[in-house]
Length: 506
Image 1: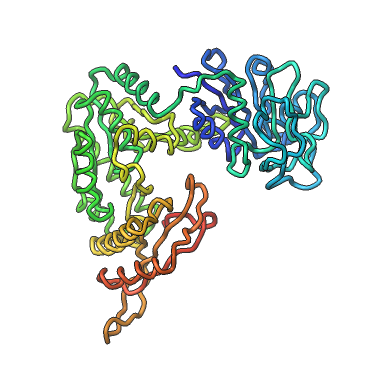
Image 2: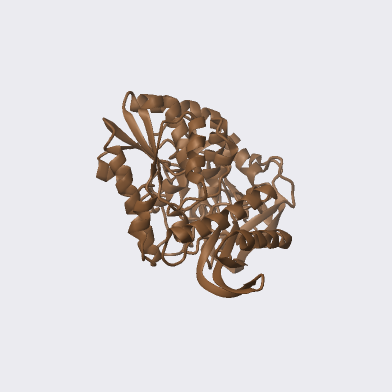
């Protein structure tokens, strides 16, 4: 069992980012709702209080009793966490004259304060709050200020409690990682969290949990399911059976390529070509949500049929990762959305779930995959939607349309790789629009299809910007698609960001 830091979540958008920064410092941490502290867990070495969308003065804001935490553990309050510590001890938090948002600089730092060890005066921090602490209780001592925020950071005398009114977890706070590292030093927590330690402890746990039981796993070709398969394979070998379903909406030659990759990894994989079955079920359907439901149900049916051909399966393996778990519970403890990757399967098949990646963030999954010796192109693969090209063909789906979008997509993705642009973007692909337009090829007038190219940069898909790819590159890709893909005479590039647009078109 790793020693850990507990992050109490008050609903901030950056709570997961705090977790990722702590993990990057080789320290295990868990994010729990603000009112679900794991009292009695002897591995807890420190506590971080996150930010919140609320003001401490709001009636609906989260106000837990911290009396059993303060003084017992080292505590770091961030933004709302800092304001709540002051407010709940008799301090005053009031609306600022103006909303404090954006870059600021710490111009008064207590040089003897271990929280700021190695952090110079003038260091840049990122503010994001409408309220400010206007009065601190007597035993609270200011340890850093900015031009506009006197109580930018403080400590509570007689306790191992510190707080900052800015966000050390975000990129724009120059020495934020150093501050978090200093806090971890004061917690005395063992920094033994790494991909190697995760693999060793997880394989040992899986062997104990599963024994001689048999496990079935749905593969998608994506990072999460692939790393899950390799981890389970390392623990239970041939007792793992993987099923890879081709719904006819994968990228060009992807079914064959992925099966070949999995063979190299020594996995026991059954590949199912169910293209015709899916095309038949999707014939004439144009509504995006309907398409998703048909593809989802079809996948469950095919997987279930194949699973029933196997004997004594007791477990369903899934590539659920930590953000799925966090998002599946609101901070009030009610379910927002199911985190089951393959919705409905565990109940339908009466299987127990095994989710070896459930405590990892996406970047950690990639590091674990590389440590397991997996091929880079499997690990660094762009996210690809479950319904595949089904939601990149606007309107009804036919095998002919699938072929058009596969060929256009293949040209685009190969070009991104050849021009060393693939790793610079989060996700890219081609979309077939239900729009025909006039063109000229040779001396003939054409009336054919339009392909939209989509490429975005992002860190977590919550927000995304369109990728500013070179014009020369886009011109080359456009020409190649129009010349080589029969049925296309126009290519456009999508320059919408998320929000307001989404990454996928459907």
